[in-house]
Image (cartoon, rainbow, N blue to C red; front, top):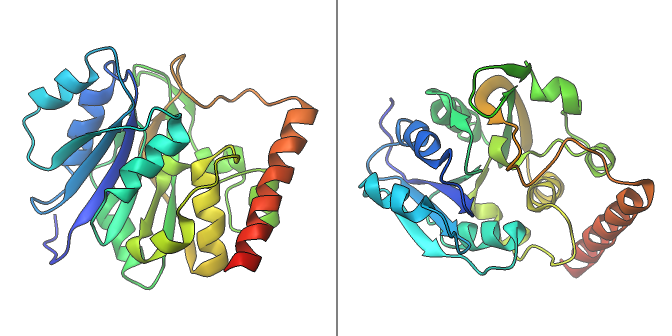
Length: 238
């Protein structure tokens, strides 16, 4: 792992994540240097999530109380408490490849404000590949309209510059997805790179907050119209 003279942050939102959190955190820690930090905003877990995190006895980890207002605001709370030059987003169940941080930082240091990378989609116990490429499934690429219609900004595959925080925060209360908002705003304000490397094993299981199942046409249209409204409001406000 290459030495560097700055800190990076990993923002994690947890809620009853005991089943996978240990394996996930170990894969993240293996990517980090001693000066880095992992900020976990826990939204009132009633299982052993906090106990498992404490048992790791890792000085890089700081666990804070979440706002108990859903996953979107829980992530915002984690992000607000990050102090690193770059902020990686992470779910509570995925597995990082050993080269994830180095490959992403190399692109960011080349002048980009946000990097999105590909992932292998696996089942809950990581024993079966469901999809060899998340990119192929989502047709992942840049484009404002494209990512309003079919979002490719998957938070677990994203890292962005701290300099973008004044633009992406606060996350509007009425939009559906925090990562889609972050991706679109940074695309409007900075430089985005979609990296082809598969740097994550993205678990899909019964406890996932998000789902592969589509919304009804009415709900889908409502969500997109709300997002468009907030993006327009942001553009004129700024």
